[in-house]
Image (cartoon, rainbow, N blue to C red; front, top):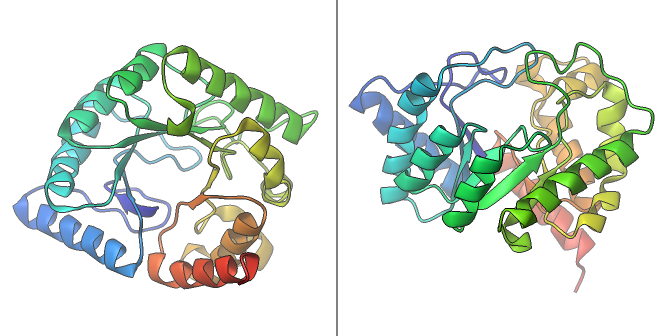
Length: 264
């Protein structure tokens, strides 16, 4: 899953706002490069979800992402994911041609959003989070990390099924970096196989995140090697989808890891 950030304040320093046709052409060129580099799907986001970030209005989020989603859907053959938890934004994205809603608030599900995803026969990512991006790192406490994250994701899956979404359209994400400490992030990747109990594909998004910087003492622009290590470990422990910025380099690491994990 290649990341396409349409924000002015992306933590990874790769965001861009679409203000005119020239910018839209630049975005399409970026998406085409992600696909050439090996992305199997594109994830479009219009609201920053870094720790401490603030919400933007529905109107502003629609303005940022819907023209891009429509343009991508008309030109690209790969599935398009939209990173949103707002029902109005999700509906317009699905109408514009999106195939998947990547919902960071997956453990605090909005029933109208779920019913809408079901009606469109779309897929959904349920990510684990405590609080909101603005508050999630304020008080990070778990008595039993794995048990609690697994339990809350299971509740989310059940709500999706109750809303009519088929199990093969539900993807789970343990929420690396979302209301987690360094130790929690490492523990989740190490024990990723535990989440196979939910019988849903597992998505992991470690790309360039601060826990890599904490381990390696590297700023966000120098976390590629750490990201590759986290991706390979995630795959070996059961991840099916990885959400990344540096598609070309990580695609090679994925192919090598898959070759090792599935010898002839």
